[in-house]
Amino acid sequence: MKIRVLGSSGSQLPGLNLTSFLLDRTVLIDTGSAASMLDFDEQKRIELVLLSHIHIDHSLGLMLMADNLVGQTRKPIKILSIPEVLDGLRGHLFNNQVWPDFTSIPSAKSAVFSLQALTEGRTARAGKYAVTAARVSHSVPATGFVIGDGRSSLLYTGDTRATDRIWKLARTVRDLRGVIIETSFPNHMQGMADLSGHLTPRSLQAEIVKSGLRVPFYVYHLKALHLSRVQKEIAALKNPQIRFATEGATYSL
Ligand SMILES: [Zn+2]
Ligand SMILES: [Zn+2]
Image (cartoon, rainbow, N blue to C red; front, side, top):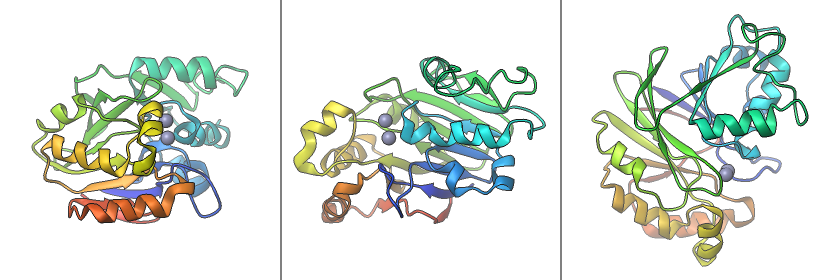
């Protein structure tokens, strides 16, 4: 699998793009900067979206891509997530107030998006991919995913504070090649991180140790105001498993 980092920032400023990863040209994992980083033809190729939670920094691209793609898709793009996230998407974003309901216009069959609920821990097929959701611990309902293509698998945490279930799932995945994990705030803001459902370098290290996994951990979601401090604190961990998910980079897993 090839994973291209469209955006790996926890904030949007010139030169910093919100969380979104493109898998093999057809799958988006979160969509923060998808509409600004993918051109129209690339957006048309998307078949599947894994949405971790509805916070704007992860869902913005979904909203804006819908506006580009209405009337342009042969079949709806599937949005996969746990039921609470899909309910939130319908109720708070595609609610015909904030934005039109792009799951039903002009009709459900010819809409830009269709929604597919995932049962936590149960693997669902989506095209050539196997997708499994595991809830994580954030300030709103949120899930991480394991996605595999039969040859290798990747784990994406989404936004989370310390969590357990996803590591339990990860240990069962034999072909796991990498983890994409958030880290948002510096160590001295541990209280704020815990409150808002995020990790610091210290809690990142604890999660890696707790996971027992030996694969690379690609870090994303650093907050712009604390970027250099968080980078320094992560470097000070001297953990060879940790890499930064660099915007614009493509990783083969
Ligand atoms: Zn969030
Ligand atoms: Zn976020």
